[in-house]
Every structure is written in structure tokens, then in C-alpha cells.
Length: 307
Image (tube, rainbow, N blue to C red; front, side, top):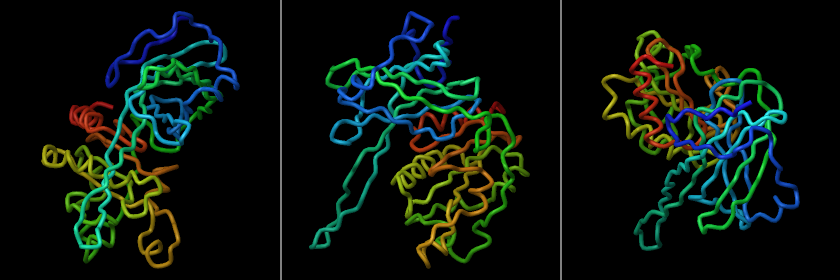
């Protein structure tokens, strides 16, 4: 059985391993000795086309940027898919105020590695092997992790209709701070609800993010990336931001409670970005960090009516 090569939509793929059977795995001892740890970012793996995301951490627990990582996805003893990951990153800007009142930005970078178009076609346990060469040229190191693939994702599946969620928009509040934790909410994000976008038969983007209360610190940067596309697409695409938590409770009582939209969309984490076509069917979904070119590629596909 020959392993399948993933489609080249967002990544360049090469033949990484000659054999189609599972090769020697990294032993626990070898994994412990390697100066890098492989960890899974994708939390909603299922039998559908998936954007497979993972991170690499060094011995000092810091993120490793710019490594070369090749993956193979193994079911039983067969290598089913293989591909090369692309590193995606966002800049996190934190204002720092000096005693004299001067303000400057601290810039931190967060990133992850992505293999796009992964189709794990059988539910159950899979083994993922990562062949990693570090930025300093050391390696390659062979790492592995077992993952569980569900029969159905908790979030909407690619190609399926999305939940026609009704939620508050700018028309329902006296101030956008009631439905947004952004320091400066962008009005375009609060014009229509998901239900209205579906009924209007226009492509749309939904961002589930909470800039002020995000556990990963990625919500603000991800929302900013989506906002960068608004000027070019606002005449053809609706943009929607939904806070995943009840803001009145988290602000008033410090209590975290999911809003109904978060439950309807089955979100296991935040932030998430979904791109939907004019027929209300999901074209793409991104968990955590996404690159501007990834989003624009999905928007073009949605405008063309594809899934």
C-alpha cells in the first residue's frame, strides 16, 4: 500500500519516507534525550479533512520557531499520509507603561506548525511520527505521539451547514463593550448575527475569541489578523466576532460560563475562526493561530462557492 501525499493547497509536500510500512519508532529513551518535545495543538481530530497543528518546545520550555518538521500518519502498520509542516506565527503586542508615562510595546511571538489537508479516514488510534531538524541544524530527531481520531468532530464539519446561531449584534446593545472585550471593537464585526448571514446568502467569517480573557493570549492577535481582511472583503463577505463567554458574568463575578453560540458550535478551545460560503456550508476552520494567507485562501474559496 502506497502512502498518500497530501494536497499542495497551503504546503509543499515531498516524499518523506520510502517504505509504506511503519518504520522504527522513536523509543521513549530517544524521545527523552531529544532536545525537543512534540505536542498536539489540534483538539478536534475526526474523520474529515483536518488542519493538523502541533508545537515544538525546547528543554527550557520555550517555543521552537523555524524548525523543519516532516510528519507521517500511521494506522496500524501502514503509513497512510505524509507531509511537511509549515510554521505559522503571530506577534503578540503588550503595552508597557514606564513610570514617566512613556508607553512602548513588548512584542512576543507565538507560533505553531501546520500540515493542511490531512484526511484521517478511520476513527480510532493513530500514531503520528515527526522527523524534526532544529533551526541550528541539529537532528533530525524522531518523535511520535498517539492521537485519537473521532468519527465526528465536535465543531461543524467541512462541507456541512453551520448552526444558524442567533446572538446579540450592535443593534441590541447601547455600547459594543457589552458584546466585545476588545479595547477598540471594530463595528464591522457586530453588524449581523450568524443567522442573518446565513439567511442573507453571503459568505461570512466567524471568530470565536475573547481578547481580554483569553487563556492562550492568542485571541487578540487572531482577531487582528481577521480584521486585516475586512477592507478588501467587506463588500462581499460578512465578518462576525462572538465572545465565547458571558461577558457580564466574567466581568461582574469572575465566573466563566459559555454562551449558547459556543455550545452550538461545539468549541473545545478558543480562539477559533470559521469561514462559511453563501450556502451556509463550512469551507474552512482554524484552531488557534492562523496566517493571513491561510484566511485569504479560504475566503477566495468561499466566494467561489466551494467547500
